[in-house]
Image 1 (cartoon, helix red, strand yellow):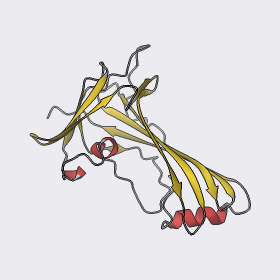
Image 2 (cartoon, one colour; image 1 turned 90 degrees about the vertical axis):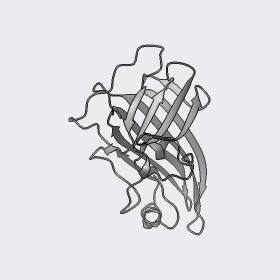
Image 3 (cartoon, helix red, strand yellow; image 1 turned 180 degrees about the vertical axis):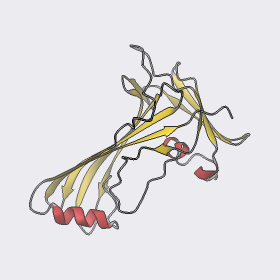
Image 4 (cartoon, helix red, strand yellow; image 1 turned 60 degrees about the vertical axis):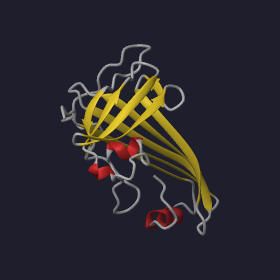
Length: 199
């Protein structure tokens, strides 16, 4: 992910790209030790119903552009960043997904036996069903003050169940823009696994 102007990596990127267009790509690989994604039947949404641990297991090949920083990998952080009624993401023990085969998807966030909050999403408004899984997409424009430049950033969160019942998340971040007057293009794909739980 292209980072804020305070990040050393953004300044380094500007310096490296001064004389030519610049493109970076950091694509994580699905570990052999992880179960494969489950099959999605044609013309249906991926079935991701179930209850999963909130803390992820990250793919060892995940890479991060911002030096020395690992982005939060809590399931609650990715899907409901500001919807926990004042609770911290590390307090959430598990998340329940339900209703995905209908026209909406409901998530319930728990701290052990206590419900912290719930959040509902509507198909074709909040998410779409694709051959890769259920996709949440967001985008915005970023302006980089004193170093000059801007970018259009797109984040896709792709959820699919694995053959062992765990939940797999692919975070696909991409951006295109200018650093000073130099075209810049970045893509970062990270993979996460959330274990199924009977909590």
